[in-house]
Length: 260
Image 1 (cartoon, rainbow, N blue to C red):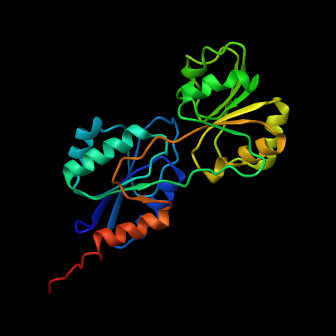
Image 2: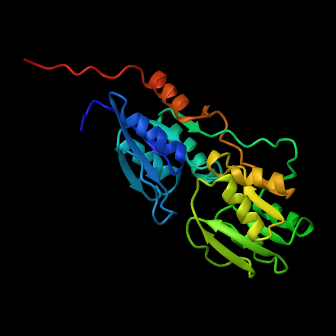
């Protein structure tokens, strides 16, 4: 290990985080560590060093940053992982290191879309009874308790890992991981007779085909809007922009001089 390398911690778990880690592995004078929350049983591991598990709040993260001599922090977590983003902002301020948020752009409705924006999962559950009876729920396995009281509706729940109670009583679990194809999403909606879709505005291209399939079928979509990002934290829209920010922030790589 090069002791003169600048240490970058990437809070990851997303496709963009893995792409960023792979790019930073090729950067001269940079050492990258990716941190995964550990909520997925078999996560896709990024390039470089990896740690799995929480930090113990903003104080624990700040302590980790200092103890491991981190020079820059990049929050590349899911757009809906709001708590860790605010912890990252507090920890970076405490440890006096630069912080960047890597956030993929959100989805934008187009002609023919029937979108119902809501601020939370609880609001999504309140909107459903008037929109349909057979629900395709693609918000993940966390937060299913918000829909558990909807006993008159049937749910198809797609997630990477199996959902745990409490969840809707009339529910079929579909364990799958993107990217998903448009043909596959069309077939799924047709086969399960879906008449309403619920999704979070994750903005990922890998899961966007369901929106196109819903538009074609005239199916309403309940879109849970993203939580606000921490104030004052710069935002990059993609891994390339994040890598440019890092080069500008850290400056040129250190020069290793050989004695002799």
